[in-house]
Structures are given as structure tokens and as C-alpha cells.
Image (cartoon, rainbow, N blue to C red):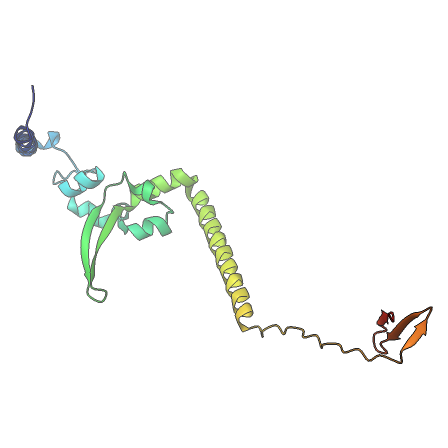
Length: 206
């Protein structure tokens, strides 16, 4: 059976409507359930689960617990990289909250991403072999950064020295002018000798 573009759009719309309906139905059914069968907070008996946290972090937590327990602190994307040494590729599979923030000073808008600290920390410890492994990785990162800075400074110093060094003087050779002594004749060959460099010039009379 062939589908046209309109048919595909309709199927997508029906699928989305069905997902919304299923979610509403689940909420209604859960609302009517006895307390012992309802989804509960992982920290307390509360059934008032924060749906946003459940969707982003796959955690069933109530508002009271998520604000009162440090295990549920949120950290910025920058912190995931500096404090836990994660990369962009590491963060692909983590849920996060996104918040747009206007910077009037720079006339631009940035998107602030917030991650669940406990999830980031757990992944980081697995990647680097625990807390001690993470500390060693941080030290090595600092050493590498210091070495790069020193190499950069050395290149800059060499460039400055070359720039500030006085121009090399070219050695100018003074043109030599022979100062010949008296002409002489020996074995039929005439000659004269420079008194400075001992150059000997010879010639014959024809």
C-alpha cells in the first residue's frame, strides 16, 4: 500500500494524539488507584511525583525531596567538564534541563544546560576508576595544561628575541688595490710583485 505525504502527516498526528491520550489515561488510572499502588517517591512515601524530573532523569522524586537532598543537586554543563572531566560525547545520553538566558552585554542568547549531579558523578567514577582515579586525571590535565603554557611562552619569547634583535651587519670587503714593486726580468720573463699580497704578475715582450 502506497502512502502520500498527506497520509504520513496524518499518521504522525494520530500517533502524537495517541501518546497524549495514553499519558492522560495513565494519569487518570493512577489517580484512582489506592495509595499503596501509586508510584511513590524514591525517598519518601509521597505519590506527588515531579513529572519533569521523571522525564529528564528517569527518577521518581517529589518536589520536597529533590530540593532537600544534595544527591539531587543540579550542575551546569561547564561543571560536568571541569569537575568531572566529561566530554561532549559522554553527555549525549544524559537528560538535562535547558534554560535560555539573555546576555545584554554581549547582545546574544545562550542555552544553559543543567544535569543531575549524582548521575554525572557516577558515570565519571566509572570512567576514571573512582574518586582517586578522577583526582589523578585532574592532576594530569593540569600538568598537560602547564606544559602547553610553557611551550607557548617559549615560542613567544623566541619570536620576541628575533623581532628585537639588531639586524645582522653584512661584512663588507674592502676592494684590494695592488701596489707593485719594481719590474724585473728573469729568464726572459718580465714580472712584478705586489708588496701587499705578494701577487706576481708576469708577461713577455713580443
